[in-house]
Image (cartoon, rainbow, N blue to C red; front, top):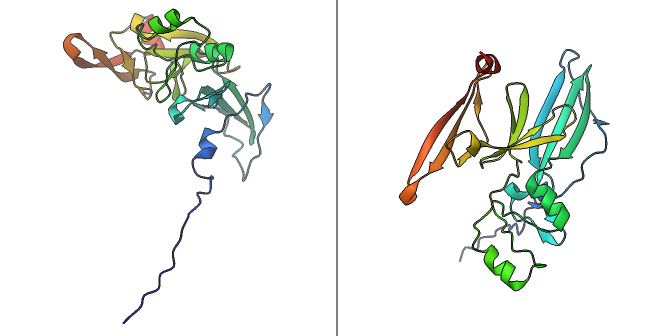
Length: 224
């Protein structure tokens, strides 16, 4: 009888240690720091690169369970004369501020459910279930320009204006006050002249659903 031998690999480790690295929280910086540059950056390349992402995955004893739920952290890379300076700050959204104040998950996120405040009495907690799900403003997905301003966003109807120089949070904007949409994608298309195109959804009666194409004109056209 012919016998076959097999070399069995019981476990394969991902270089990043599985999925755990992407769920690690970090702290914001008190001031910008110089970045280590590997290789050479052309001296003529200058400007700033802004990026959004999750940066906080637990509040008190409560974790956020999904990658899309980590609290919004804005990153900035300033490039000048072949050098890079790095900075990061948390966006002061309602979801973040209230979570930090109450030391718990206050607003339901994509994959993490918020429960009624345990400090409330039993009747207050009971009626909380009938108030509906509060829409998050956790703008961790993207950041894009509208005119001369920059807005961090997620897939809901809220966007947050930020200062691209200091990374300070300026104000929260509810798009429902200007557009007939319940939410917009976090990845608009921006034309060379500054025109912003996006697509949003609108829920109507009897579970009807419509998609709306949104156009935000460039600053010059808007002021004309």
